[in-house]
Length: 457
Image 1 (cartoon, rainbow, N blue to C red):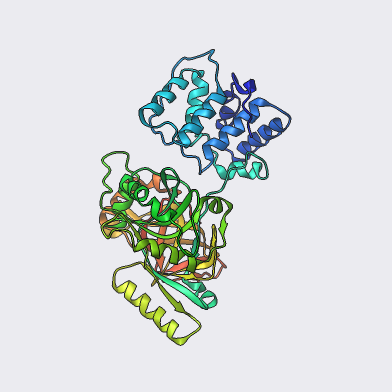
Image 2: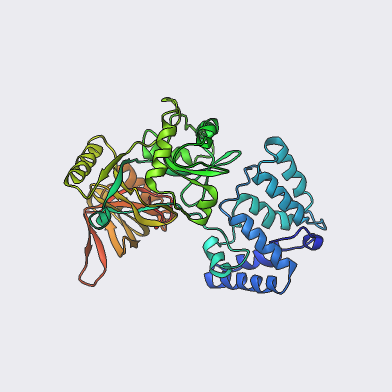
């Protein structure tokens, strides 16, 4: 993509491209800037190629630089701006060839070799994994698809809701309880990186990372029915004492306490297959592999293998087992159950290979407005106006229940900050209005999701 050439040294790309992107909030403008950069890059502009490669570094979800203390500089001009040296440092950080104090010193040193505007407005932002100019990997890929600068998409296996059960639960399937936690993908190589289902790095679970490292040899052993070679991805859910407590600790900047949290692993896939988006080893084989490993993991470990039950849905007995399994899961306080097709591959997209069943439907919608309360709720939140596309329907609904008195006060005081946030809403069913739009029957606020509306488990 970029050869090791001096043609990239000395370039001033932040002022040329980043500032252009920052000059307007218009998505059309930002797309045109990227289109202009792509055309210039194809015509041989080292400046544009440098900019696009930095975008690739910043937004590639599989590149994690493992550093948080990144300095800013002031009033530095006339520096060499050694971009190839900077990219070599990025690779050393990504592969953990340098870590800790050595890494911080290397970043500090190279920051002095850039003009302040180049370092602060581009190089530093690359290390932060956010160029902070109003673009995302989607914006970039709307222009850069099928080029060497296209951003790899971080996707994982996602489930459909229970409305698909009757049509797609046939033959041999696996039943698992549905945990109320945070979906976490662990990329395991020489070290362990924990990421959310949309590729955002988690840094607040060091005990779980350490536990996975201690058990790498178990995963690397030659077990039936396949052998893991090279780097691989564990797919699972971290669970704490409660979902709210877990989310609060997951994103804290200081005073983090995640000691009592457990990583429940329910799938595994080689990293190269994960990046391709598919692994043809079927669910039953993957689960059998993990169950063998689970027998060798200490009961008190912070990682556990998710247990499950195989049933044949083509039989009356299998359907009865499903009903009892679901009832028992709810009685034990679980969200619901997962139904997984034992003959299906791991595919990094939403499919009927996995189906989630809950006693009520849930949808993820964006907050587009806030209504004041009346009566006892006067001067605080009355309802959230929520809208979005979920389960094949365009939904708009006022959600006025599910809030505590504290919630109503807090949300009303922060009402401007709520706009655009994604919330999970539980309801009895999706209903259709006379004008063709959809709403929800008995909607209740559950929680803030913190993810894109189409990125549900």
